[in-house]
Image 1 (cartoon, rainbow, N blue to C red):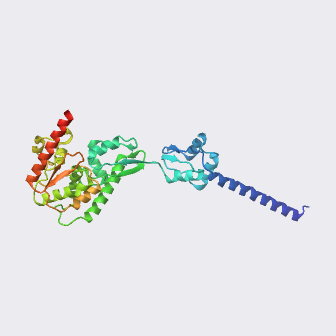
Image 2 (cartoon, rainbow, N blue to C red):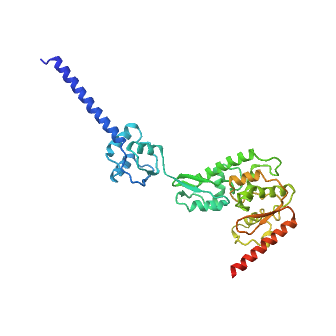
Length: 348
């Protein structure tokens, strides 16, 4: 008959040995999960297609020499319930990443982001063309699809011009163009509401949309930040006095795609809804995408009595401002003389 004491000691020793082995295994397992992967210094771009199983990702990374013991990571992913929570997308695996943090990155959908800039002064057509030229944007819209754009965005407007905030946007590769527009539209609505809330009193515009129209004209008239509020002041005073705005960018917009870059007297005399030489007040829609600075200028015009401005022709984008028609006519003659002198020098 076996000695009960010896049996008890044997069982205790076996249990202790088992615990030590198990503890050692857990320690080694945890150590493996926290050991940096063999990644290149520049990082490893990695594309996870929709529906890709995590086991396939682990095996693929092992095949590239990045991941050791893929079975251990697959086991960890199953035990933690993360194997089924991996997000598709384009990732950048950077040095310092461990098996554990790699799995967390895939579960969080921490995908690589790309930058796309909407430029102040672009038209809606130019915006669509720019997105179509970007391989990171999935093109789903054509130039004729703008009614669908308004419908999908729930925008209460009759035209998409001017509705998207110029800004740099970051998003994963293959983001749909309509989703980029949705973000830009939301930010424009937010910016417009905030600027409208702090607007000056006694402005000759009654809605945020009218402010957007005026801002788009200011955006197209000057690229100089120092001139925006002065140009806004000229337009606001003209509107208050029932004077026509007589601004070339609106005429050009009304001519449309047929404009060849040469604005003529015939263009100025040809009536369109956007010709502010033949029609009073603001045009029916914005003529471009105004930035927030232009919106701010439209709602905070510079005080003064200037009613006219014309390009100086100095090559810096500046304008000369005048209070009277005689002063303005003299400034126009000065501009034309400078243009003629420049052409003569160019022909020598």
